[in-house]
Image 1: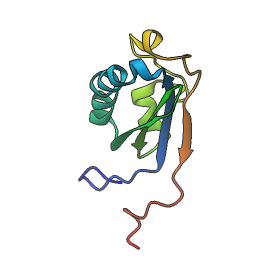
Image 2: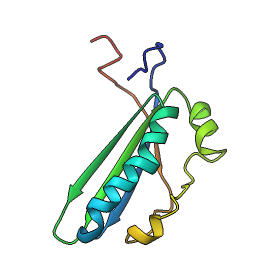
Image 3: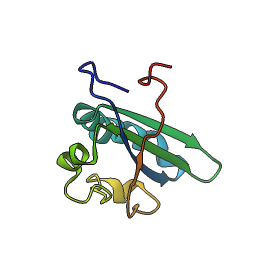
Image 4: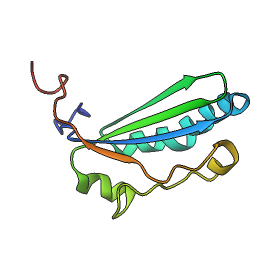
Length: 113
């Protein structure tokens, strides 16, 4: 995954949160506007996912970074630390304690295969 200037995503930062079904649409709008769109301006790329279940809706955001150092410039010295959005406590069933940071081992969109 690149952003047009040939930087290659080597790190994925994954956040997960859950809300009750009656708040899911409002949270989706909020998360997109306040969380994901600003994130996408800093990262090489970002995605937002939603899964609706009977008793909850789960949201997952994944941002892509060229290095842990680049991600740390956005997220702070501990890139696994969560920076909750102002209204997360109002929407989420529980506040996540950390994000997952993974090394991208294979990315078919950028490896030329």
